[in-house]
Structure formats: C-alpha cells, structure tokens
Amino acid sequence: MPTIDLQPVLEGALVRLQPTRAGDWDGMFAAASDPLVWEVHPASDRYKEPVFRRFFDEGLASGGCLTILDRESGMIIGSSRYHGHDPAAGEIEIGWTFLARPYWGGRYNREVKRLMLGHIYGWIDTVVFLVGDTNIRSRRAMEKIGGRLRDEIRVRSDIPHLVYEFRRPALPA
Image (cartoon, rainbow, N blue to C red; front, side, top):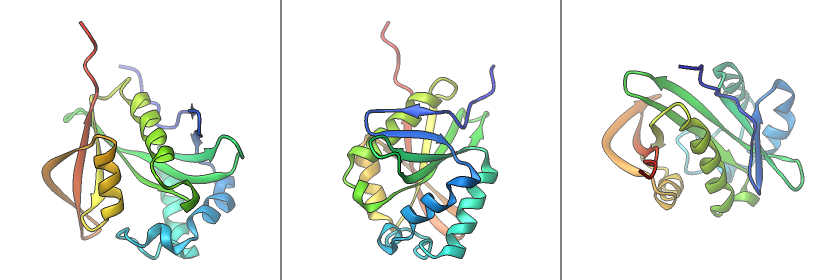
C-alpha cells in the first residue's frame, strides 16, 4: 500500500490547505491570538504566544499539520492536522483545527473537513475527531457536518474527549 500523504495541497472554493512551514508562524499566530477562538477549548490559553508556540512547534514536528488559507485573500486563517494513523483499527484522527473568528459559521469549517476527509479516504476507511467534552462549539460543528458520536471517551492531557467518527462512503454498485 502506498504511503499516506499527510501533508497534501488541497483546494476548495473558499480555502487552500497546504503543508505548514516554519515561515507560517506570523500569519498563524495572528489568526490564533484572539482569546475568543479558544474560550471553549480545553486549552483556553492557547491565544498566548508561548502556549501557541508549543502548539505550532508540535504541529510542525507532527508531519501532518496543514495551514489553512483564505483563497480570496491568501491570508492564513487557521490550521488542522492528520494524526495517529492506526493501521490495526483502520483509522486516523483529524484534529487540532482552529479558524480565525471571521471564518466561523460553518462554511469554511465544512469545506476544510470535506477536503481533508475526501483526501484521506484514499487510504483510510474511518476518521475520528476527538473533541473536548466541554467544547460545545466543536461538538455542534461535528454534529452539523455528520459526525457520529461513538460510545467512547479518550483522555488526552488529562481532559476527557468525545470521539466522533466519519466512515468512507460506500461506492455505488
């Protein structure tokens, strides 16, 4: 089986996703430095430069981090990641997604997830999203785009996370 491409370039009508590079720091931090972006997130202090620096550096080191750009302006508006490919379970996680506030409301997030899911289904049948149990905004977004809530809790950094699942659609016979 070919190696999974965890850092593709993906383009939609609204966004372009591309591999995150060190040079993305200024634009990414500008998009992330709004405290309201993180207010319901388990890491609610991620708008602070040293905290976001760790997040950014971990993304670079992960080999699966994507920078999200607004196609119209070319500005960095957020990021997302592929993570934790588990061949035995036939699944991978998409997560660590954030968008600058002007891009909230569903359209941009929906397109980012559609592009990432469409790409990874070339290799993987099941994609999971871990959402902090108190992150109501992200839970609603998952439900809005069709995520199925598993009867499972995973703990990450001492925080309980709900698991939402997406399965590759069956091809018509």
